[in-house]
Length: 313
Image (cartoon, rainbow, N blue to C red; front, side):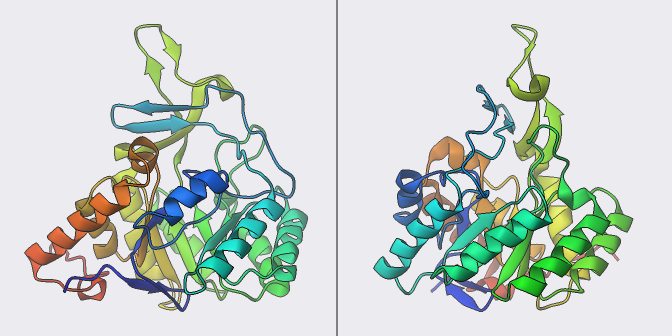
């Protein structure tokens, strides 16, 4: 029997696949579809203190090798998602969910975590430090001193399982520096990676950019970012304390892609661009393909190959 079950933050999940925050998680209708799929769980939209409408449309476009977006964190506000998850916890009490949050400063992060602490939420928090698509707001994950200050405050006020979603890093010294910061804290996981920020895609026929916000600059996802995502997953797998697990995100559109993320060290994988294209039915195909890849290698469980990437010595 080939199993794709996994554990993360001390919780068991029947399947290692889930959605990425931002895709099929804006409201109850979308979350219900992921809940009814073969995904092991869901993560909500990255919730802010107040609801946001996001950036003007068009703000998402599929491309030949992935997607470009500048959504601008549209969401219904944290109370909406806490209420939804509360209902799901009662309906399916043996399932654990992820609540994504993002504040625009440390005080808002604390406010969001205080709301979670005051609720009946029993799942895992994903603190988004990596959104590249809010005009005038830099990606927090590239300000290493700020990340350390945020996490110092976060773990002073919040004691539940919490991880961080990170932007992609491109230099070995940045892996070293960020891992040294993260290893100071009792993180449950890191999620690598969010989209590569501020790419540009052009519609050659019209000689125009493909999305409206920021004069066409947006986050790049899909096939484009898979090598970068794999590098980030494996770099942090090598550097982080073993207690800090990794969620692999970026360029997963097949079971083979998921296999590679897990081989690099991921305990779970999130799907974004391909999920947006195919819908939650994709989790059935991805699971079947991952099981096929495992069978071809003689593996029966994820721990048989997780993190066991080989080198050319």
